[in-house]
Image 1 (cartoon, rainbow, N blue to C red):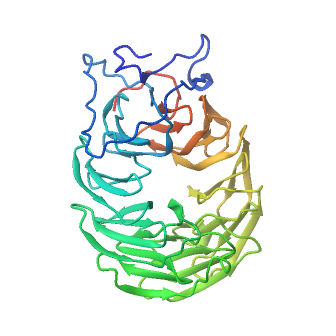
Image 2: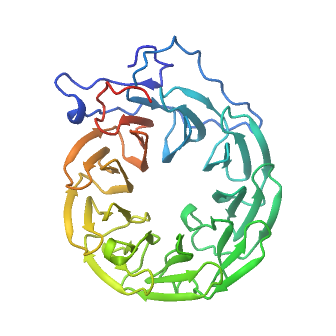
Image 3: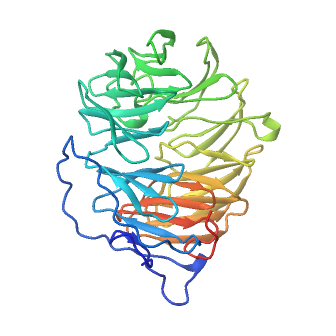
Length: 433
């Protein structure tokens, strides 16, 4: 463990002798821990433990162990990393020391404008992002299953078809509606908010609403759950002024301002993930990219919807979009990560993990980081697919890794959050940033 460890939860177990850097792998046993204690709605944040004397100005990889399960993707905002483990925990990105936690359960969480917005189900609340003090709290009419924040507006989806918009700074309710779809009450299938517009699937129509007033801007007859192949409608806005929508086996390009459908494309199998947009002309790798549940990857012309190429991989249950970066399309299908040329669709390489790929890979500084159900976090060379380093944890990687300023952060079902040197893994010696 680190010298000057901030309590029993933070530390590092050095790899066995002879293993360093890319060869080092850490297996962390999962501790026995009691189930979560019922939260107290008025409990203050738990202060951090006393800090040890200042450590040397050299950054070191760290691990923070929670007392309960960790889930989802960590959120990095400034000098803090936020993660949900029943409570909200805020960790210092440099040292891994916990700055604060709350005793409030957070089944849903979003960080924006210096605030943590979260819900324990029947309650919606906001905390100061720097010290965890409560900003506001309110009771909702039903269980919150989806929570998103954009431009000072919090949008929630509640069980039974409710959608609400709240002022992020004080919790004032701006508007609400009922009758939204109830077939898929999951975070990714809930109401979406992008750039001041809320998108709701209601009465077999895709409705675009003004985020502040709830006024309808346009609607389109997208169809009900049966018409959409029994899967949620997924969408992603793009800088070209269009909303790209996957609805079952269909892909649509919709003008964000008017709701006019520019084109639609139909595939032989349904899509579980939203489309990914790459800017620029098709000859430079621009376009729309997505993969269906069979693992077929499609490249569509963003202007016409024409099918430019399609390549089969393997069965894919992921709800995450494919990743388009530096002229390549990276897709996790089954237990392998595939990389294709974005212009031609030519396969470049395939890397086989020991279990199903979890979440979405992240690209940074010529490297790809991704997690797997085999308990391992992998880092590959983005151009050639060679393994640079891997970290074996004590549980399945959850969510997607996050890469910031030369550090990759990841959560595992071994109840730990990891911060690793993006280039060297568990190796040390990089100057603090």
